[in-house]
Length: 252
Image (cartoon, rainbow, N blue to C red; front, side, top):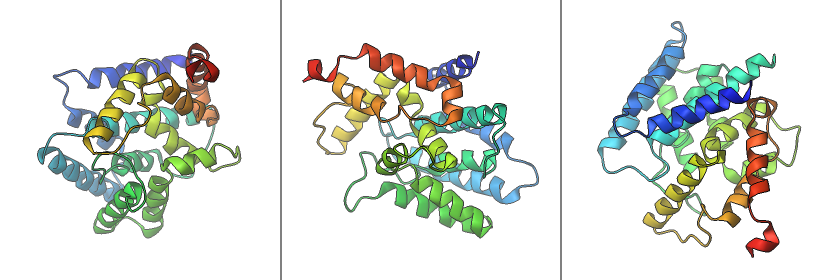
């Protein structure tokens, strides 16, 4: 059953949160998927990993935007790429490069949320682009990585999902970014972690992300999914949660 792939993803995400788990071991799986003849990609993986490790040593991690979230997004992208292959879809970017996109998409995330004068996706994209240039990644591929990191911006994703003809890769990076949060149970736990992260960053949270109104708004923004995400069963999972949540009139 296609839903089993989504169950495998959730099981891996939960296992990653066990006290004894070393997130670096999860990242190593990404490195093994890089073709031996793609030296720039291998160098870029090493550079990004070293940067993430240095940041992890500098202080306590963010509650949500931390190495485990990055690992979740890389695993989600692997699942989406595998689903695309089963559907016979040809992606306009190699799967291992898409994993590198997710590895770097929050590279400069200090916690909290983007806003005026605080474009966290741009900060991360620029940092990844500099590493890519140092690693001799082809310019066209570097630009594609930058564009896909910028495509994870929530306003862009919301607009994209109003247009079913949008770019498939942009759909996939957006879905990989939030797949863990779209699941029941784990998604609520991650929402609580995001609320705590925002508060720690001194940013007001008018509606806790784990609350029923916030979950309804969040899940409702992802009722339009890519074919690979639908084939994983993600649409059914979202629909079931929306059906179980109080209706808007009962919330307010």
